[in-house]
Image 1 (tube, rainbow, N blue to C red):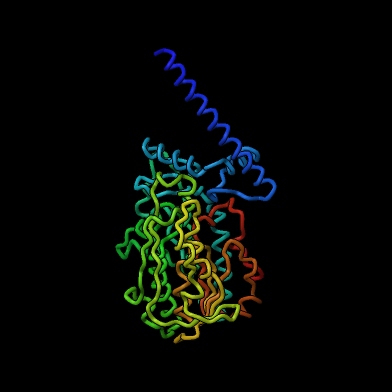
Image 2 (cartoon, one colour):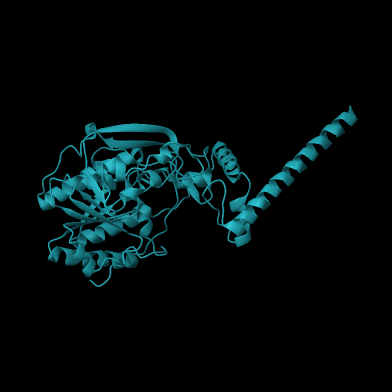
Length: 388
């Protein structure tokens, strides 16, 4: 019996050794492929371990995502609220925290917006700063004990500064709360983005603002959900935070595709004409569920960020949309609602000059920012408008 136990233990040890060698060999192959061809297998998230070589090894480790899944599952069972730079809120939603931004920094940003606003108003162009909701709710932050986060605080102070400077603002956090909407029903659990339903809701708020400011005529079908088909893709979207924590830490999000049932005719920069869904919506990511990529939201809606002319429009309103990826869920409706829309990425607004404004001649400028940009160490120029 003793010899049998010894033989069994030896067999287990050999199997474990062989598996370790196999995983190591495949991981080494992946590492070589990464260095030679810049190819990374498995999921698109890469750990940042400080040391480049350690980071490269972690990035190319064989079946890395399965180890992330296992790690996330164990942390979930143990009730741990932090993993790979992600915080799990008390309600199960995921967050990466934002540090405190000084009043001096926020005031500088607010004054840059006010300068652009003053220029626009002098030429008869309306401008509004629309603040997107944050992953942690303003009225129900759900932060675990001991976690510090200033995302909502930074937004609150920035909006107050803009209001003081007479800049029109829309705070979607407040609007949702006042409309009796649970903030978290409008956000993905594993991502920082709002949902496609939230984008539709936000369009309605923006449409009301634009009509009030310009007096333009609207096609009322666009803002009524009864004029759309909504297709739900169950357990389909594992967002940017989910890529860091795996499938079992916070679960997987559903993804809803919202398509109009009425006819539309738009034109893109290439001169292509077609319906909104033909030119803007990319259905390919919805044909193959892929948990190792966070890009369902981005790939399906990515074409919404562009320059479009609405050939069926009932008004002549031209919109300049300065936004980040949150605009992908809103722009399809703006494209259908107004004569022309052009997009500028708000991570770098250095192209926004008086010459640009005069050439495009917008009736309305929308600045729609996620609060990531309201931090002093952000690597970009989100308020660096030039020449005003």
